[in-house]
Length: 443
Ligand code: GLU
Image (cartoon, rainbow, N blue to C red; front, side, top):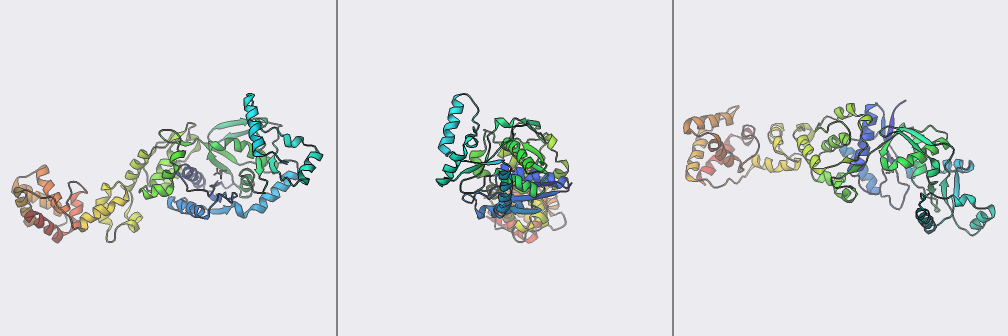
């Protein structure tokens, strides 16, 4: 059976590190098995869903290289949910309820006050026919609940958490549809997982109790449940991530110069027993993806780690991979010279400017100016102009170490540090290099 996974975001905001991680793991799971990774837009909440977020989700996945093998939208599948609803209703697995939110809140408080779990008391099921008819006659529209089967415990073997068991009587019959006819998440998701042939549902552990309910929905709809796995949530260094999610959106990270490869490298392994490694080759993460290495403890997301990995990733990126994002005229040799000095790719302009000029060298004392004049004369072009120049100056002046190199770097680049001069000097070129040395000698 082909493995089919899905990533099912609600388009009510931008993707952030938490849901990017879920998307990535579903993508890795599918790729490793040679299966399919689907994008399902959970947009049944018309009020909160926005088209701009649908587009942003697609763009973020494309940026991350997690392009789906298919896309579905719940808002276009309402007829399917209606049909499932009718079937479940005919079988007595869905029932109308009329409690207002206030009444439900009160019931909750009373239960908690008595030290009982706040489980819906099924009062709606106890209504007499006459009471129900009266509500209907009064035009009081009900919301709808899925009736859990209390018969047997709900059990599954979770891909991350191991054997799971729930007593259905300890769960509330979930509301699946609002009085205005709109759908809540629970039933449409189960209907879609069946219709799309999803074999593996991998999501955050905040969905564990939903899974218990949905397993009963699969059964009620006469379908075998998929495999389930729930990963521990991502937390920040100081606790919950939720407050900082805006700054951890794909968009914000991209703007900060985080490469998708860095995010993939960190999120692929964070919270697993496998080491986080700054690899650019995606295949490595596909081949080693393994749910059994996922830990139960919350995974700690640290932006400093991301930045460190990002820098290591930038140092590995091939010219072809970044060419379109480089300043005009910058070739592979320039990329290789400059790459080791970058923290993010956006720093490249600063170093390219050093090659292109004009540069502003610091003022030099008289002795150094004389040395730089000598350097301008000694400069000879070859395959290794920097090695030749420094060797010649070492021999002729007796200078060595910093006294030999630093004035040359400053005169040629205007900087105290930077890319390897042996790689940089050929990029600057013979005549420009001589001009810079002379200008520094006479300044
Ligand atoms: N739209 C749901 C969410 O974002 C999907 C959960 C699921 O994977 O089933 O939480």
